[in-house]
Image (cartoon, rainbow, N blue to C red; front, side):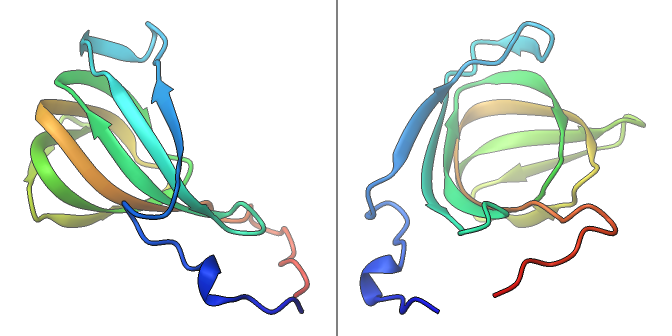
Length: 131
């Protein structure tokens, strides 16, 4: 096993990130301009776990989760609505987890910034990777 040094520790907002300006297709955007920026700070060796900082302006879009997502809202306000129409509002300081398989909408009510961690579950029956 390769030794991992202190330099391998990702410090959110400090460690250099891969920054992507996300453009959603018209089939996904419901309203608004959004202006999404995703700053990826860490990706695990098997690409199953990532962390980063996500920012967006106001707007609404369809959301379908293929990964479990944990996030901490730094600022802003969003409404997440499930496919049955039930909604919850989240704002600065909220810390939540959205499970893989969730389908619904995200409405960004005011400019929003969050730290996130995604874990992409292994498909059922797929063996774990050898260490």
